[in-house]
Image (cartoon, rainbow, N blue to C red; front, side, top):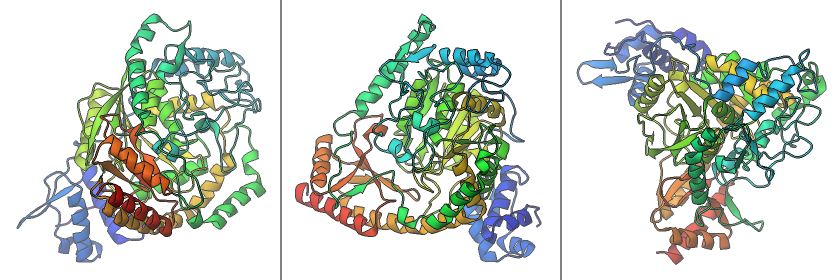
Length: 628
């Protein structure tokens, strides 16, 4: 039996034959070239066809079987189990326009952000009327033409610069180093810029760019904190009542005594299981510095005053190539947008697609930043329960879904193929959009990652978001979004509306050079070993806490999540006693919006082996002495 699969093509892309064979078979199955129910060649036959070992074919078949693409029938052979119409549909991605929000439609109709702009100005060259259009766009923004309260909900300083919030939110939001766009109340200047200095630039941190991502600090102007302007109608205000109530409920739960940041670490001997840390000692400083210094020497980032709002093309191309190799995403550089942290992509998408009163599905427990972004856009966050396999698909009446299928935050659950297909079918039937956040999935210590929703999407319904804050360092405020074709121009205009001049061009080009040189992939391979050893050490140390915590299995990422088995008061006492002995961690409360069960996230990326061992020992001592 012979089958035709693109093995030779993938063999040129991947050094390992098992990866090439896996990708070739998976593509042929997903694209429908190998139909559901068709029999595959035996391991011996396929090995002879492509000149590989029989054991390698068996390994690939087992991988495909575990992911639901094929099934084995005793005595009969291996058969294709996946139907190409199980996802959103077959064929190429649809170019059908997505249903835009009122703000998004106004942005497209007015041409806001589409014109060429003069350097140092937010005014379109040759058309000063654009400034008025930008002002109107600002007045029509979320919710119902809302403006930020004078107390500074927009986080703007009088100079027009962006004010960074002093403290980050616990857990995931701080791990990203950013919060949610203050999308509901930023006043747009006559020049059409938002949070920009008079030079049209943005403030930069010592480690990288700040830009719009820093403007999205945790001081978000949420639905209940936004002052409705005279331009807003009473009907729109009423439509936001449920949103405001939900936001109030979310804040009150997040502020609960057990779920807040319990203690402030003090003393040089403290062990802090923080989510935001990466191993700076293992970072390839010399290789990265060479790329930065080359950009400084060439000053290429200063050559053109007109910068693409989507970011440097060389970096977009490098990201597209990386995603094709590592995530099976056939990304076109023209559909990739560089953002100042992935939260910018999430917030802009919410604003483009969500009208006041629209339901937005978010995971529960899940990333609280997505909830605030939805509320800022005037949407109503709808909690979707999560179990040991991730989000549970339901027939939601919503326009937008935010999901973390690769590694659910904070539990670490991996969404199985069947549920991924159900989400894609739902998006197609509802005409909805899925924001797929790929945060913290690069480092996997066991098993094989399933293909992202974006790789399975045939209808152009998935926006894939990623960040370099975990693979590089938190201060590098660079992320990316792989956009559906129909969302490219709206997203481009929305980004330019807030950021007329693309920021961080030096870092963008340096990162492109870093990736193109192969240094990035070498760094990922090395850190996978380093973090894998740390993860195993921490998990071993935490087994002594099994009487107190229900640990969620996790095969990837830089933190371990556990539910506390006792009550809230017992959890408070345990955490307080550990803090007295110099051990701290992040409570997961700000991310848990269903019930009051305490939980904790133990980040380990930045810790040494000695610190992991010492912290685990202290927690074990406290549990033994106080509770057992």
